[in-house]
Length: 216
Image (cartoon, rainbow, N blue to C red):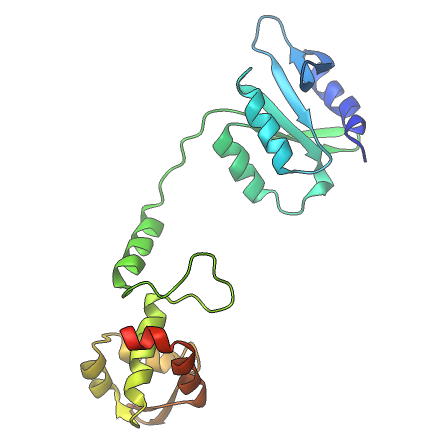
């Protein structure tokens, strides 16, 4: 598909709403006017790309009514794209054959802050000791506060089986009982009631995260 193949459907869509439509006006792919209302500008692309977004942002210097138009089948998941367009104040038109769907109209956007998510982030930040990660890392699992607590428990179990109460006292990990029972990483094994040992996988984790474990 070429960009020019999107134009007829977009033109009919806008004309159906009473706009006069013309193509390639200045740097704009499509420009539409309806009486004395502010102009509508549409940028066409065969896929949702950074170039298209940058063009749309540039057109916002001319009018608040800027749409990006792409084929409906050019993307599977439109949710993150809709969030991006909403943040930028851009509209989105999806073209399917001769049909055009206005998925989003342009307009100012003030996102609501998610207090619960922010609180979780702050708790995670506060509970982590040191900085055991590198921004952008992909080869090693992220060192979370939970994983740090798991390393504390694993390090204590190197000496041999211990009761949960002893582990909690030695490591200061208040949630030791729950962590040992859930065994999210496969590091711990229940030997007897309330008594746990370190698994080979847990011993290997202490080697993998030796730098972090030493700093805890």
